[in-house]
Length: 418
Image (cartoon, rainbow, N blue to C red; front, side, top):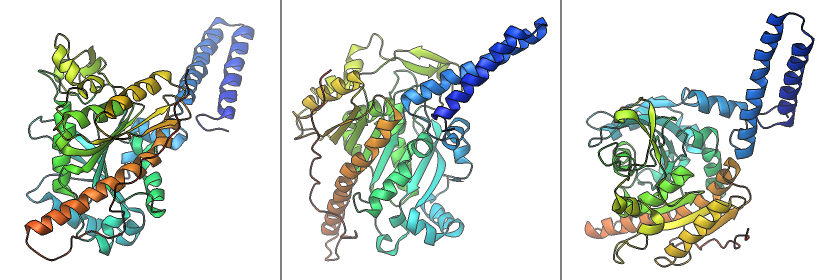
């Protein structure tokens, strides 16, 4: 009732606004009338913000809202340095010294670190979630697959944790044996909530795609016990992050084996970039491919997927959209038809809702259920190949708890015509 979307909260704002207007009407002194009118602006403004939040179904609790807007959600999350000659060993020692292995083996462990790109020199926070299996003896030598999750704009990586509840969602799937264990990586894809870089390599500007698609995966592979970037890595995102996932999947196919696009779009929009490409500078609206139609086409998944040479490997695509957002549904259906020319039965989930948080939350379970077994299968293939190359009879190191065949494609009903 009194949550950010609760009826009681809206009623309180209406009553407060009405009381202040009444004060304006009955106050005899001008100073009090002006004071009451100024105060009336506050509940009116909050009502507007709350209405937008309710429409997009984004913040459902006060705690999630405060944590996401203030960055307070990261206050209780351990931060590790990515530096050092042997960062993987250093991190593992810190995990052994500073965590409760019994609890971690039950619910997993989340931390964040700062990753600086060697080529781009971009430096941003990256959230990492290690699943419970990472701390279990049966997986002691297992190199996990990875799902890289990209947030929307405006947004931050903490939204995956504080707003979309990705960790409890993933844990529920793991406990019910509906998903395979994987490490979740949530980078900051914009460098600040004022910006919208769309994971693009801006000609002469910020090389955001290189950082997200190459430098972050390479550093994560050094930090924790995961597969090298390749077919055992997946990329997924919602809204602008969905566009990022689709574009990166096509632009960097050798680094990812699966791509999940939730309420995404399939051609670049004008970006909000820091003035002069200086981190923290005033944002300015720029179409980064102005007067460069070939680059614009290459970074338009709906166009470029028809131009990728037939011999080039493409990641498997999974799509989702909210039924009430006709634009999202039509864009997803059109991209599905194009992707089906390269892959059999590209799944498309049409979910109740629009371009809203409720759709993004609802899409997480089927996306992870579809993606992680495929990535685990690629781990098994890589382990078997490594064993053959080493000329040893030792069996590949991976627990025999996941299917060795590609999971069935989720059948979804056709979208309703608007």
